Image 1 (spheres, one colour):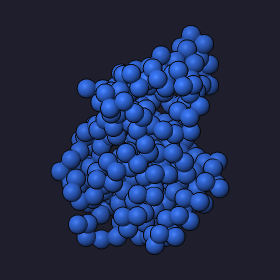
Image 2: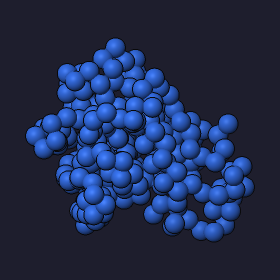
Image 3: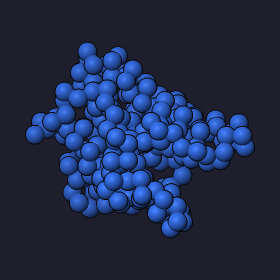
Length: 247
């Protein structure tokens, strides 16, 4: 069992996978800082649910692309809870279109939020984690970062970049007791997949051996294990949560 009350920051923690992770960590007795950019109502609801179940949570608005805002979020976390033990880099967006039609801004926005945002958060969290000589960093990548996907060159590049960032971070910080792993979800039931037509969903399901979409809880359960003391000897790994899609 974990020996102390820990504190986690979950970026993009107000909706979807981020919300599920925040709720799971809060249910496990971890203090949760729910980062959001625009979904303040959803962030408040997530925090209220954690608190209502006996947990401890606050919300914090910060643009992960902006290092100064990220650094302020980390300072506020330390002032409120005293430690930063867990960082979940979940914030992400899509700007899907074919490569030949992709605008520079569509490329830049996805790379800046999905990849640079994670870099900013890791950089800001490194100093307090190194000082306490322990910490868990989880980057939420995607199976498309491994296998690619037509119409998502920017998104796939950002998620593939997260895997490289994970491995480099793991090697740099291991000597200080800090682990870094990536989780690569497959097709998960979120707001994004709800917008897909039934025909497209059926095409996806044909390629998934378990013949179903995943749920945000499927991802949150793995993250909860990876940030626990039971995973202290795991670092630099990529965990596919995809129903067998990528084997």
